[in-house]
Length: 135
Image 1 (tube, rainbow, N blue to C red):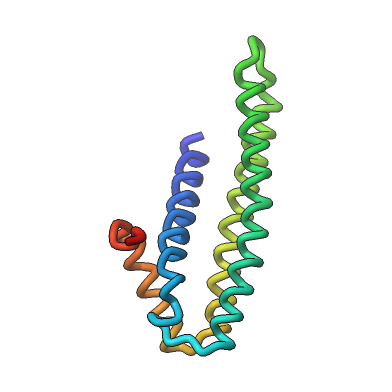
Image 2: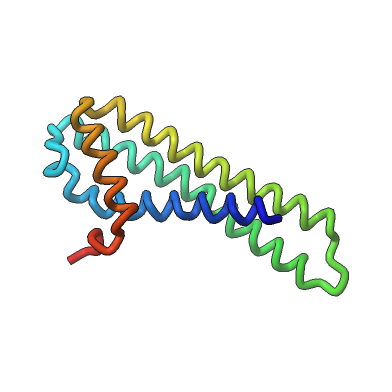
């Protein structure tokens, strides 16, 4: 259970980092010097990834509800709780893979110099999320 908690924390931290990086995306064209084609490709990628992530988040929400409902019973089924927890872990793994694929696709869209700047911006947003708050 401790490993499961750590996995969830790491994945949520990664998603939080992505959200912070997403706040910079409005200025991505300026930060990275994107041309019109790259900007369109990044926008399409964002839409695709949001759709994939939404499906995972919807499934996670349902699974958490199921877990809560089972756990609050007078005699919860431990096997069922374990199965739900395992499925929650699978959904978090899918989210992590989605993030990895997104980064791979970004690398295909950007030049090497732009990609390095993208990674730098992303790392900075992870270190100092307060600087990414909308003004």
